[in-house]
Every structure is written in structure tokens, then in C-alpha cells.
Length: 151
Image (cartoon, rainbow, N blue to C red):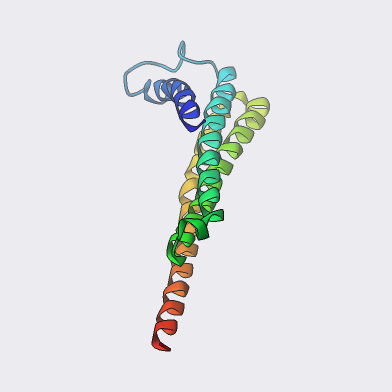
């Protein structure tokens, strides 16, 4: 399923980059894509992002659910859990981008490209998840040191 989604996801990416790079190549945006087509492009792209990262999150969730059978250490289990949060976070941003592109595309078609700027939120999400991961890892290490000190 992941392979299919990744292959499907690459095709609209080609069009997105052709629009982004058009000014650098000396082409105007005209003839490449109309303003009315931008929400559809972000819809397809966002669907791909949401699908890819949701599948990755579900795979990590499955690994986390089977952590005892897989013999994961506390830190490895934490890593699996954090990857679930991270991937669902990025998937949510993809869904938000679709929503922004379509809502703004209806209200102000020339601004539908703002749906692309939503992806800058990935940095904020990853920063927060990274901070959570660091706190939890320190807690695990502190508990591990305390339990070995009592032995």
C-alpha cells in the first residue's frame, strides 16, 4: 500500500515543482496552471502527504502495539510512539493544507497557493514532538539509572 501511494504521490509533485520553478526558469505562471486548478493540485498533493504519513504512523503504531513480542527496550518503544505522533502530525498538516487550499480557493482563488505555506507548520510540529521525545527519554534514563543503583 505504501509503495502504491508513494508512486501516486510523485506525479502531482512534478506539477507543483513546475509551478514553483517557473519564475526561476523565466516562464510566467500562465499556461502552466490556472488559479482554479491550484486547489485541486493541493488536494491531490495533500492527499498523498496524508496517505503516506498515515501509513507510516500506522506501521509504527503496529510496532508499538507489538513492543513486548518484538522485545523493544523502553527507549525503542518510546521511539516507536514518537514516530506515531510525528507521522500523524505531518499527515494532519497535509489534511490542513487541503482544507486551506479549498476554502481560500473558493473565497479568493488567487490566494489558493497559501495552502502550500501550511507545510511550514511541519517544523513547529517536529520541534514540539522532539521536545517531548527528549523529556521522555531523560525520564526513561533517570528511571533506568535509579533501578540499576538499587541493584
